[in-house]
Length: 416
Image (cartoon, rainbow, N blue to C red):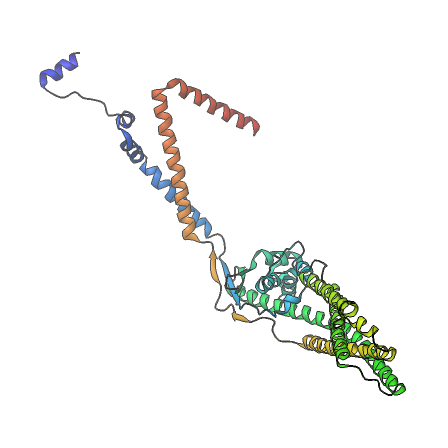
C-alpha cells in the first residue's frame, strides 16, 4: 500500500518483475511459440549441429563403397537362353526363384547374370575366396549381396557390383558379365548336343524306313507292271504324308524338351496343343466318310485293291521322305548350335575408369542427422513448455501425469 502511494506521489509507472515464464504465458498465439523457440535457440541449433558433425566424423571410419555398372543391349528374340528351361534357371539361381510367366529375354538375361552358377564360376575364376579370406560359399554369398542386375523399360540390362576398391569393382562387373556369357553358351551348347544326338538316332531310323518303303514301291511296280494313281489320290497322299511327318517331328521335339523342361513349361504345353490339333486334322483326312474329296480312307475304299496297296506304300514313302527332310534340317541346326562359340549377348558399355562412389554419402548423412536432431529437440522443447503451463493452469492433472511417469520409470528399472 505504501509502495503504491509512493509511485502515485512520484508519478512513476508501476514496476513489475520480469519472469520469462510469466511473459510467455501472457504472450498470445503464435508469438508465444516464437518466444519459446527464441528462449531455446541455443539448444535448437547447437545440439543438431554437434550431432551432425559427429555423424559425419564417424562416417569417415567406414570405407568408401564404389559401384561399377555394365550395360547390356536388349537380347534378340532368338536369345539362346529363351530355350533354357526355367527349372534350370531356378537351379542356377540357387532355387526358390520365380520368373514371371511373360518374362522377356532381358528378364531371363538378368536372371542368368545374377545366378548362383555365374557367381560360383566367378569366385573360382578370380580366386575371390582367397582375396576375401573366406570360404567359397561365403564368398558367393558376399558377391550376391554386393551385385545385381536391373532391367530398364527399354529392355537394356544394367549389371552392377559394389566394392571398396573402385578399380576392382570394374574387374568384378566385367568378369560377372563374361562368366554369364560363358555359362549361357555352355548350357545352350550342351542342350544342342543332346538334341543332335537324339535327332541323329531318329534320322538313321527314318532313313532306313525310307529306303525300305522305296524298295517296296519298286518291287510292287515291277510285279504289277506300274499301276498309276489318280491325281486326286496323289494329292491326298501328299497332304496326309506331310501332316504325318510334321506330327512325328513334333513328337520328337516334345521328347527332347521333356528331358529338360517341366510339364508346365509354355513350350511344352504349346507343342502338346499343336500335336493334338495336327492329330485331329490327320484323323479327319484319313477317316472322314462323308467327303471323299478329303477322306483318304473313304476314297480308297472305292478303288481297286491294287490301287489301295499302291496308295499305302506311296504314303509310307512320302511320310518317310518328309520326315527325313524335317529331321535333316533340325539335325543341321543342332549341330551348328553345338559348335557355335559367338557371344550370346552384346555389351554396350563395359565398366571402365573406376566405379562411382555410392556410400557413405556424408553430405546426406549430415543433413539427415541435423534435421532429425532438430525435430527431436523441438519436440522436447514443446513438451517441456506444455507441461510447464499445465503445472500452472491445472496442478492436479500435472501431479497425476508426473505420478504416471514415475511409475513407468520404476517399472522399467525393475524389469532391467
